[in-house]
Image (cartoon, rainbow, N blue to C red):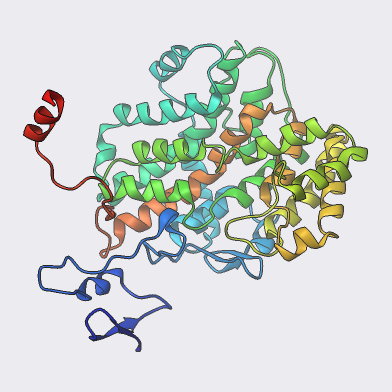
Length: 430
């Protein structure tokens, strides 16, 4: 095993810290002290920019080379070739299912799509203009009270049933949140339809007594988008899912917390911001001026750059091509021309190239969602449906990892030193 040699110039002592998988254990730093009373050295890492909290076998990302793999499979080989539920099985259990496993898996999820009638009453309590994502967060949390056995997270049979329920009921809740926000009647799930076709049916059917046939091209496109968004390593919401799971909380509460993290504009709300930006730009002719403003620091170019990817986001390439298949059904979204021109100009500009700023997954996904008929306040909720597979995979891996403990980071205290109330009284009298 390789070692890191550390010489503490405060004491002159030398320490050997083992290197494993290209990392050192942070607890080894505690051995570096100036005295026996010293707590030991800490690492300070705001935002966990360079701290690995877990060993995971789920998703591999090489941001320098633009690589994304689920359980070893390149995203390019899965998206559009394997349906979302099959990819969800892969993420959660580590291998692609056999034919019989897939049939059983799809059956169990399909037959858990209904939600308790009292959940519908619960959702009715939200104000008519509540954001659909806020409704989803609240309702996911409420589900834990309907399935009290869900707290038995170490029972594999119980855990399996909650995985079925969360994958099955999240699209139903999401569709009901959409209908509620528009004052429309809820549409019950249709078990004869595929996962995404059923969701489209619950969202867009005009009324319960009216027929609606989801377009198979749009259902397939949405399925591909769900695959692309299914997991993305230790992102903010996955980290929250694991943190709540580390306290052995039930998966519904953990998923609600993860969805709340995704709700933030710096995480799941980015595609909504991209569409707002493209609408504001309004025409291809304004692109040069926008680029100029970005370079001067006067504004941000939403959907460009990524904390992980320093090459072209592999998901963005797939979504860009997918857009044209959708447009054949929906008609061309005029925002695509503005987006393409922004990309063309930016990738030909040294400012963006030198900074390795490329379109990310959010740059084109919102354009497709809008073309399908989804309002911008539904974009993040679509992200949440897709990411549920990844959250559950991360949650279960954390639950079964013998090395994991309850998440409890250290801090560097920078507040006032010891003081006493008597001193406050003297200061007031003075």
